[in-house]
Image 1 (tube, rainbow, N blue to C red):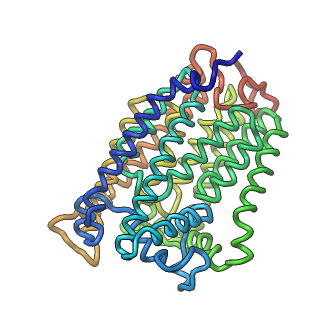
Image 2: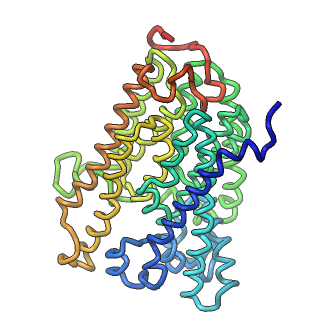
Amino acid sequence: MKPPLYLRAVPYLPLGLFAALGAVLAYLVRLPCRTGGWNDQVSTYTNFCYTDIYPLYFDRQLATQNPYFADVPFDKQVEYPVVLGEVMQFFAWIARWWEQDVAAQAVRFYDLTVVLMAISLVVGVLLMAAVAGPTRRWDALWYALAPAVILAAYINWDLVAGALSMGMMLAWARQRQVLAGVLLGLAIATKFYPLMFVGALFLLTLRTMRWRPFLVTIVSAAVAWLVVNVPFMLLAWDGWRRFYVFSQERGVDWGSPWLFFQNKGWPVLGSGDVSTMGMVALAVLCLGIAILTLAAPRRPRLAQICFLALAAFMMTNKVWSPQFVLWLVPFAVLARPNWKPLALWQLAEVWYFFAIWLYLLNQPPLERTDLGIGDDTYFTAVWGRLLTIAIMMAFVVRDILRPAKDLVRQGGVDDQGGGVFDQAPDKFTLLPASR
């Protein structure tokens, strides 16, 4: 007989409090901007408190119009999937009702959004702890208090997608495939990166041949995605497609290694079609992940494949914003909760967080060479986080090839977050499997 819910919740209470602490610290990081610094770019960058939330209230006309339906030029439409667009609309409505002055509305819009982000962080941490299972529950502290999480938490709306992604993982772990699919569909309709988890589920399904749970999840995800997207596709086509057009046409942007190649004038890598090269590079990495999954001596854990797929997506993308660290932290920790490479990666992410704002100080129109840093210093930060993630990927690959090295699988544990994959026999492998 299971103990009452309140008793089962007790072990999670400290984690929830630590996550709340992380959310408060993230708010304090941006307090210099919250009290007026956003109105001056130099102040924003020197205080390291930039956020998209405040300026987009003005630049996307949220003070007067609603996302996707706004009568604005195409490049001023909200460039996010519909769940985030509707989150923005909801809080813009409240801000308009609450404040009369437009500047005060924008600050209130930020405050309200931060409350949602803080709740998303706490929920995400608790869900991650449940996914990790009783033997690794405290690994979720990384998501609650990692320095890069605190610094990047309120740059954008990414924590909403993080909570939905962790909810999907927990629902899958508890073998509630319909719920897992609905949460996956909503996560993809919030930020596009959870689409990479479909490939992870497919590869492990292929190895175990447990197709029904996978198909139920994918169909549920497709239905959930269509339910929230189709109304906007029919009623506000131009506004709805802005995200997809923007993603396709967007050039190389901050944080991407492709920017280094362009800046240094490398042949081919610095002058070719980055969209094509990025897709080819991602396809090559995904092929390697597929071969690894199907050829490993023991079926990999779901979190390991999700981490590798997501890291591959980030490393080959045209843009690598500072807040993308929020995507990866929970999956990196679930994949390999070893503190040394995680700490090294966090140092690299923290250095990148400070480097990007210092670099922007040195760029037009500011060109404050007395305050900012140059190309070479900035690109040490770009390559620092790429290389530290590559190191973590290499360790995860080693754990997959040598399962005895996997910290999570000690003591007879298989895959506590794997759902139907947990303890599943291998049905299809490229090489003979061994236990």
